[in-house]
Length: 422
Length: 94
Image (cartoon, rainbow over the protein chains, first blue to last red):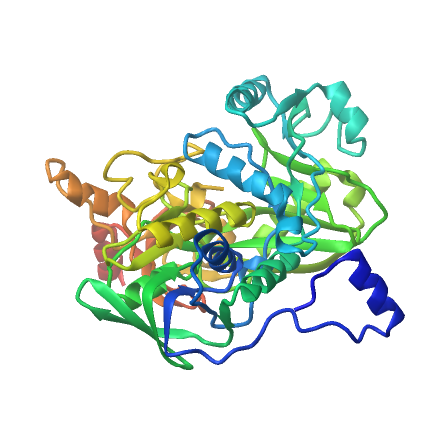
């Protein structure tokens, strides 16, 4: 497999681009693996990669019903940040951000991680106080963060609606400078290629249709490409977790499936250097500009439960209103594409990386709005859990029993209603 | 846009309605064991297919409705008032 480098780009440029191998193999499934991960999305691929790299597991399969990275991996707004306050979230997302910072080198694949700063606007003294509390907590626990005055904000982000007549006048912003964006497809491809180089079999178009149990153990998976046995099995299928859970006859989960839309406009000249969020004491809206120039933005979920990967129009209107309210200069910009992904909305807005009632089945689920940024740490800790059969300290409360133990990780403080954890 | 046939107001856009959630949840008695409350509050079947759910016609008659809806196709199978007494009275008035 070619190692990508400046030299390989140069050499292939001279020799007609004929020296490139395929980035990963397309193997036939073997009868049995040490670990089978269901779901070749970002988290499944990252898990396979870290299992191989950190824990020396060699015989791994990742099975995927569609094509690699064809689900939520490509249906997000690519924001990476670690501005969390709750214990459990704070150290988890900070670890993730640190992994992001070296990810392109680690994977030998340019994921175009751009630390362009994440700017959360606030619109009232109360929301400024709340932001100050959150960002001070972050600073006291080794995460960067700062508050920008209105003057500083205007200097850095000149095009926002600072008019006195705006519905939510802007007072300033809470900023995490190390946060930013990455190219979501490249993250999927980079992890796939790196995992494949460690011998991981990535098996696409292989839908799991049944989970074969022997008492309190999983022995294998029935798939559209035959039965695949696994000594250990991990689910990483956020959005469809309840369906697989049902196949394993494990009952209910603290998860509802909702859909979230994202939008991209026609390409514009450079307009917005940061990720801007209109969410603290105002509406719910986030926007950045891709390297191609498109404005990438999104807002709330569609408010009702759904497994359909298509969005509804009232949210399109709602998000468009937010966009023109915060950046009136976008008023005549045309929408190029919009898409919708189904996600696990959990009961407290926090994910699950945990053991299950079955001895050799492990669960990675419940990512709500936040799965993209979590990718490296999710794979890291899920691999650690599968390899060592115990959760790392950081994810010790990311389990299914936290509700009965009263240890909710409810960052938004919205209570046990999945649709409210935006 | 989902169109919901409200039994009181007729067929309306879903944007007039607020979404409640799983309509099959029955809360246990106040003195029931904590496990039963944990299950009622936190655990969901999360059906892909036809499920019973509550919606409120917030920008209409403000009534709570019990709706059977397909969570994949969004087709609505049935709509009735969520309150048993109201549903019964509506049935008898027909």
